[in-house]
Image 1 (cartoon, rainbow, N blue to C red):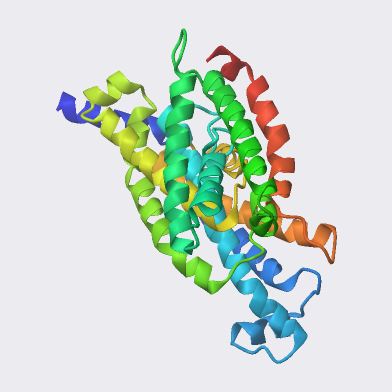
Image 2 (cartoon, rainbow, N blue to C red):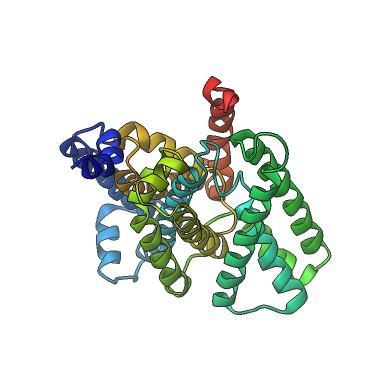
Length: 347
């Protein structure tokens, strides 16, 4: 009887909000995302009336307004998918490393994926869109392992600030290498210039179809690890005492996060700070139970990236500001706030 009670301890400790309240917040977040998706297909260089939006959703493209909506629909869907992937990826990375600063961009994972794709295209003639995804995932995994190894050196092991600093330095170095490769190759510089910033402007149903199986697999792996991540939050020794295979859980959850990060980077470029901001914001609504936090992070990431895309299109009409710039403007101050918190400085 004691063993059963002990095994249930993590769940009991993590449930700080009634399920009804969480469901209401989840439905509210879903409603916000739906409104943002409508705004995404209706607003831009040419604003579209509701009647044209409805007609375009039914397949009509006879007018300029309807054609604009038809073009914006895949862009909106890609923003939702990539935002959800980055939100979940950041949430899992924070859970696996127990590091509040963990984020695919800050830890250099995005730039590792970018460097591997650019290198494969420039020196090995990679041209397959599916090949981009595989190469990006390999680069993301290698970069994550490298940053964690560097952050683990010295006294105290892999503390949050050491890992964050190692990730920032690695990301800067990889970004410089990407620029050095692209600048010497005029034949690929044009296509990679906007991709390096991070955006969803080149979305198409074909690209979504290519990346969707990888994103679905990554989402499934991460969601299945939710309960185990709750145990990891209590510490490795206690998690092992509760029957979790700590190394297996970490490797599996990290694999899911890398798949999501690599696939989203391959299709949209290195978009930063979504995985940092969204999990912290969602903890205010859902608490720290990963079984709830992961779905919240998916919807929150989708909403944030969709909103960033709408803001980028509206800010400098008729030109676009890529979502990578908008999320950096949002996430930069948030990152500084997290670093300056006393809790993080003491870790």
